[in-house]
Amino acid sequence: MARKRGSGWPRPRGEQRDESHGTEGRIVTERHSLTAQPGETARLDRFVSDRLELSRTRVQKLLADGRITLDGRRPRKSELVEPGSVVEVEVPDAEPVDIVAEDLPLVIVYEDEDLLVVDKKAGMVVHPAPGHYTGTLVNALLWHVPDIEGVGGRARPGIVHRLDRDTSGLLVVAKTDASHRSLSDAIKARRVKRFYLAAAWGHVSETPLVVDAPIGRDPKDRKRMAIVEDGRNATTRFEVRERWLRADLLHVALKTGRTHQIRVHLEYVGHPVIGDATYGLGWERGLGGPTRRWVDELSRRIERQFLHATELRFRHPTTGHEMVFESSLPDDLQTIAEWARSE
Image 1 (tube, rainbow, N blue to C red):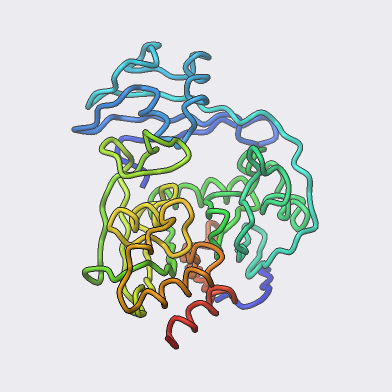
Image 2 (cartoon, rainbow, N blue to C red):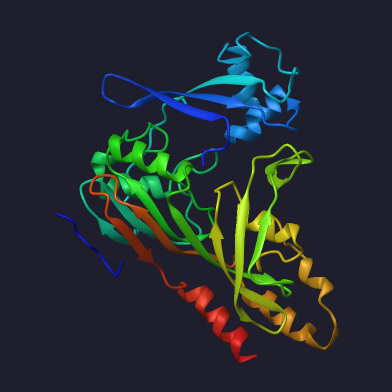
């Protein structure tokens, strides 16, 4: 029986994914078949890195281990992938790490035998990674739901999608391997609907505004994402909910789910997320004139990027029932919004 806590109410073209499982049903290797599309030409290592969102170092290790083929043969990393080429990639689980269960605050808005929905606070990393092996959402999940260990893989148990560290809001987490596969497939097929509230500098030129621009690793800074010609297709829909003095509160619908997609697309159209230290740092300095005092005060008040995952819709992997969850702006962002309206 479902237990409720609190208030809750595509795969890219040419890409196929398969999974091998160990004796305990845990994912050992993911196999991807990637077909380069018309106009898509890139170095092999960059092509795989951008398509699968892996580091270039990880891709080069996969190449050295013979886990990547190009049109059925072992290639060199510098070879070009051209339209129609088929790249087969085997991605084994990351090396086992000791993930410690931690008794951390966790807002669970819904839970049943197959899944749970959490409302992540800002500042919490979703899963362990270099520099963040403790204090993550996964550490908290292992404490609250011990049986989740190993679901969908050892390094990211239960995780089927992510939020940036400084983005708050709703995430669905799988509690069984079957649910993990079903939810992961639903996300890739774009059957999971994710909506956000974002505050952006300036005023967008039209509403709704649909941004369709490919995203990949920034060739000048591999820690950032950027609009790149050979990136993965990405589409975001923005609609103005409120117009403030020199900013907009936007309702955002993800059509795809690329890394930093909302933040990169808003930077691309010249309206970065307020408080975004990676894609919008210092942008507000160009907003001068008589409203400069308002801009400076808002910049002083904001302590993190104004981005919140406010709504999540998907069909339950076992029952098929439509699940809908909503999350109001957390206190820090609500305070900012109230000040912006009053001014």
